[in-house]
Image (cartoon, rainbow, N blue to C red; front, side):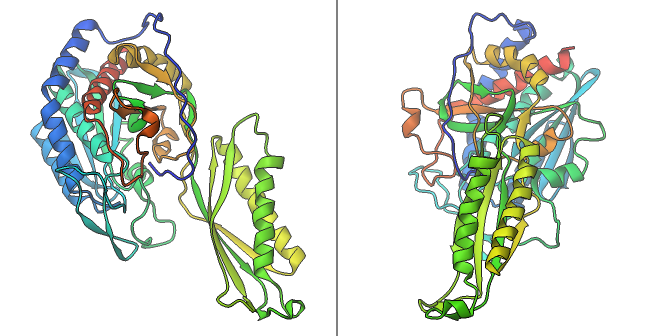
Length: 441
């Protein structure tokens, strides 16, 4: 998950009195629980192995090989090298039916781990041409282990499985670790979609999860509609005319112009958008220009991020940003060039009917501990799958119930850690959702 600005996650209790209308038959649920519990030690071992050997985006060769070998041993049809280093396994049930995709991301982050663990990462990698420390600071090691275990649970229940399950192990969710080879190059989920992971056979729905320290182990957090924001990175160059700082009228000051543009862009959210519909954020995180106190430079460079929970609003913000920057620059006699990195991430929007349909099973698999999450202004490329087929993305609690979630290190922190009891909860939940969806109407 790509995390920049964070909003507080608000959990609201699931109404325990609700009787599941659609849910896994009790005998199947008991078998899922038994199989998931029996695999707990192996699931943890996989997670620790992957954690100790993290790999950056599109460099997940070791992880992909581990996944592919496991899926092949289960008798699945396996494709490797999908969308880069992705792996796809296809499990065909005992009879024809719908096709469900389950997705896990495999990449790590350029972060130096500070958690004292016997399996802590000491790995190095190459990020944008530089050697960096590498760590699974966002839980993708857990996601991969969960889906590997889910594949084994469901393969063992093949005779009770109608339809088909696609297990999508995706690289590069966190974004590029090297400069693009060509303009418009796609990575991560978009590259997987380009490679046809939702076709042959055509996928009817897709599920994904994310480990979250903001919730206790045993809890899953869902939200119909927008659950994660879009994420767009932009760069801006403001060009003026260099001159002596003592004679600013002889030039065009790009620093002052850039400052006015920064302030003007803040009015897009505060004065131009209907925030009663959805919140949004425009943040400038970098501004660089000049190299001496008495020289007004020719150029200033800015970088920032835009977050929105509505994709139409996202497009409107980008249009307004360009208009604002160009108009202010023109008024100052300068020029402003605004560029958005492609691809950005669309908002992660859960299909409301699918979420309502699966909610009783979320509650059933967690013994009533499915809770409502607030919107989170992080972003996820799971939205690429949801743009093609109905999808549901949910959070998996990762903090020891005896500890305060408020003090837990967040995703992307060098102190990020999970309670590994969450892994079996994830396996149980994903397997239950699968059997319910494929057996349902």
